[in-house]
Image (cartoon, rainbow, N blue to C red):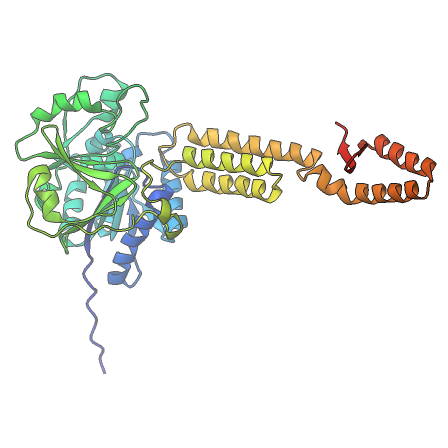
Length: 435
């Protein structure tokens, strides 16, 4: 009997935009959930591809690509193939078309940090924008974060040129692949960035003042979709539902007026399409436990601070100090091991700055201090010596009772020679360790 071939299930149409943290622990759970959705339709056979163009200008492009695929292997158990489209200006047509074929056949396509303007220059006059649009229409997951997220909208912020090179604020044309799904937006990741300290680096290092200069240049129907760091939005184009995940919020903004949608909220896609002032006749969005947070962290899910290696290191240094002061060797060792694990977990994150080196410095310091404590003894010396000293003092009491004063004095003198001072008081015998 001839078997009727089964028709593969249609892939869900998923658009995932992240503000940052794409290879950090905060986004591990959302990544897993996206893969699980695809696995339902593919029988767990997922063709996953990393689009390496955004950081293709960097000398260590191959190392960065390998590091990113390592993250997805370790965090999600998925093998991710590198597209091999770091650049297109080398003129190797075969290499370019081979990479684009990988992109078009991908069930899951990821792109992340780097330079948005470099990526746009490399993708110009290629089929990359068409491949992305096709996936949003026919099925598959597009997961773009940081620099790659900037390229999706009607316009793009040239971050490096403005923030690093001092150009006056200006827009660059983006891929504009989101207008077709009803989102005529400018995507701004790193929306709540605070790296500047004493100067404004929000709005993807543009700052409020410069965004106010640029905003009036946008067309009437275009608005801003801001996405905080370590935050993302998963848009299901089939169910028309968007979920905000991570630690922050997304912001719908037009002419300096904004509406925030916090992490953990489910909203109809119509709410996003209508921008900051649109009215959508729907029930109040459901509130969820933030998807980027594991169950054992749920109690602290309302903490407004953005997670980072720096915050982990600070917390574990405090735990180490407490353990050491309490002479808790196991607690001190646990803090060291936890910091070591945190460094490994965060090492794939591209936005750590000098946090990684600071954490390593803290780890080395903790190890040295534990070693010094071990040399002198982490346990309380009285706890260690107490049984021995108390036995000697009991023998001294017996000797005094039997009026063997020479023996009693000899016990006291020998204890003194060993660094133990004995004092006869009105309430009994006291002893202490001589420093």
